[in-house]
Length: 462
Image (tube, rainbow, N blue to C red; front, side, top):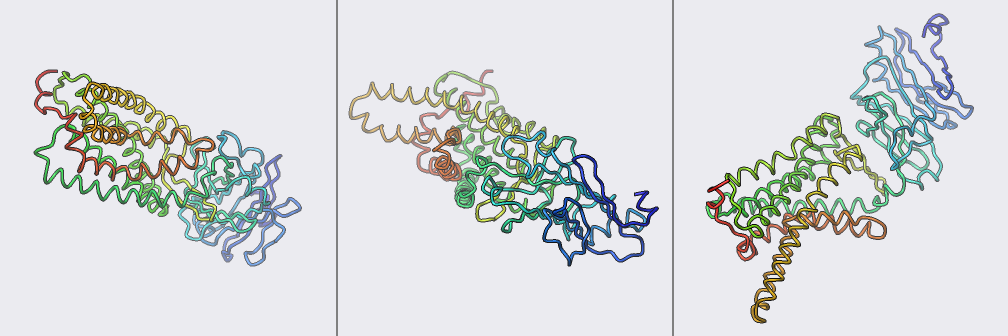
């Protein structure tokens, strides 16, 4: 910068090993204008006007007039931009689900805080057909939190023939992540899976709302503990469906605070649903298998367990910045945004690990109950067996829903079963609320009667 001021130059090149760059200054009292910084075929950076673009550029960056105006405000009237290309650092600390395109990271600075632009900074990269065959791509930026953690927030990705265009509303370090084939094997099915999920969640919410209305306004006085547990499960699933259906709309607003909140609500309601699956199994174990157990303030204790247990988990994740917007690419070129957990390790450890614990317990209880039913059936007469077979079959199917065992389909999402399991998982779990409503309305009196309890019996002793 000092040499540029002494020699009255507007451009200066930077070469430091694997790092190359260019500094550009628009002097005071000069007209602010958009510019293009182009990395040309002879491996140098050049500055062009926006109207004159070099077609031999392997990549180029358009700096908008709006960004230069913000730079002038903090640099005593001068507009400054520095562009650096870093080679061979893109794959550090990356997981094996993606790689950095061309192993290049780009840094842009204007000696000012540049964010929330309406006329975005555009970066264009040319690529060969092999890149797109190897996997989908997504524009990302460094989140500024120490390690090389990438986020898609504030950046849009457009693909046109052999050009990748990144349009970002802020400045930091940027890269293009290329997701490997295994990570995008469901991309052709993303739109249909999303449609099924949306329809199923909408149907489930409607019928669960009816069930809650029936319970609180019509049947609350007659409800037993099993029904109260079911109503808590309905509330958790309603929150889960509502946050899922509104997630994409919130993500598209690009409001970071709103995105973090909806991701937190979605994650909390999912963990709360898992917890209520566990409580439902625990309740049936206590009153059907153990039978004589008595617990003081039983409903209060399990209600606190169901709603408080997931809270510390989501609080920790939000404190470490684990919730952000992620981009899901489809083969049709449509880009879907979703607010969710950005770190795959957090996802696998927390979500898969949490459900695995619930699954082990609920499966054990399910096996014990089914075994008890089979043993009872063996000692009955043939006529009794015929009369009770339908009831027992419906009970087994109901237990699958009550214990959340439909979520276990995700464990079989490998190899040739990958795509079929995703469709089965999506249909079963998006319609889970509807199935539980049928259980509550049509089957509850027949099936839940086998697990009914005296509300007063739990209040007598510890």
